[in-house]
Image (tube, rainbow, N blue to C red):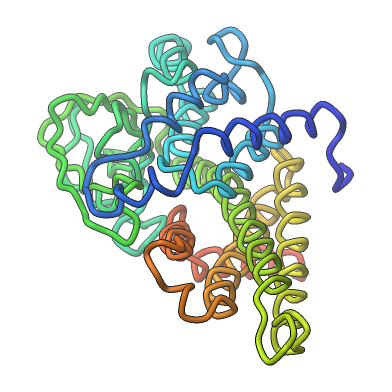
Length: 364
């Protein structure tokens, strides 16, 4: 695929940006930092109203049958405006797991609700800092789950979850209704992510895939989510780069704009390069869905986007000087989001290992 979007895709990008910039504001996001379990309902209502929740779903289950490229465009604009809810990614991951590995009955049961956004999905694969554990902390026996799924993004608000469990035949992916499941809130840098530990006690569940294919399936779902997250990170990095540039050409010191100083202009130029590299990797990864090297492409996108967003968050605050660390400036919203997204879907060390293993395999 070209690293340029076609006219229809560009229209999706432009319209989603227009809508989000009109409906998401810093003043609505700041209070979420001080409350646990709350998310920006305006953003999620907009996502449902605009049909973004159905974008990558099959038509037979009320979806729009578009793909990862188009959903990535929405995530990119969500990253620019600091969307205050994680469900665009988590519900997509849950829906793809059911679509790819579930039965017709499971698809009919869950996908229409996920497509409309009335059902919120979460994905609980990680075990602590381990994004893809060899032996999960949750067990599946007699169609029931017991154990704890830790640090689940969106877990406080989700209606269903895809869980990596230890089944009779080894690891397995299961889907469970979260009604009645105890949720332990986790306060974080970015409380709008609604992170929670999920405590399962004889929770009814259904297996999607087990045996040797379960870990491969879990990695595939992580990679799909990682590509969406990478788009969100790149959008945030671009917004920060533009904010730093605008400040640098208006703020004056020693008789000239600070953008005239090499230490500032070079830093902004480096941010531009990081953003463009991340953007290209995101487009490539999204276009490779279903291809043999999709996991490798997803790892590259994830790593480049994480570097771009982390660097942009740090450098933008530094370019702004003292005002950059104030509550009113709101730049810390991006810093918090950059740190939160850096560990969702597996941290950089996890994706570096995935990428290196893939490259070693090709070299061999």
